[in-house]
Image (cartoon, rainbow, N blue to C red; front, side, top):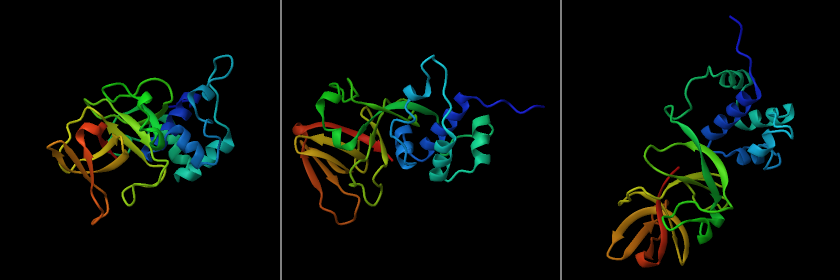
Length: 215
């Protein structure tokens, strides 16, 4: 039996899958590999005549080095013979993504707290059944020790929030990622991820958006 021929679509799909396994967007993978951040944008994958482009050999080598993946495994993924995506085979889909430094911009969201308008990138990440989500790329190092610069948060605005949940809250006093310690009597109280770290209280009436996060 002859091996299946690998095409451009297979190569891009394999790169996207490997990036998603490590919490990277296509632009995040390009940055990590020392490439132009737009190198892997969907618009760069199609030529002027509408034909799919191949990533350059140099770009591919750099990406596999950053991802710590051998050519053999990459080939298996491109052929569709490498099993499910890491994390139990969760489905992967494209979701809107914005930088943490811009997540407080009200122009980027509708009244329900969902992405709206321009200014959003795209990220391939795990789908959360029954939830509409968006992604936040951490361009500020504020998640220590549970996350690092470049990490991606999956934010679910419609999820029910309770004590102990990790959330992202946007209010008039700024943006905070933390653990819910209390959410009642008009006050939302969040704790940081380091034991002993001071808690932050938000007036519930002055919180524009609060949503469950996964990372």
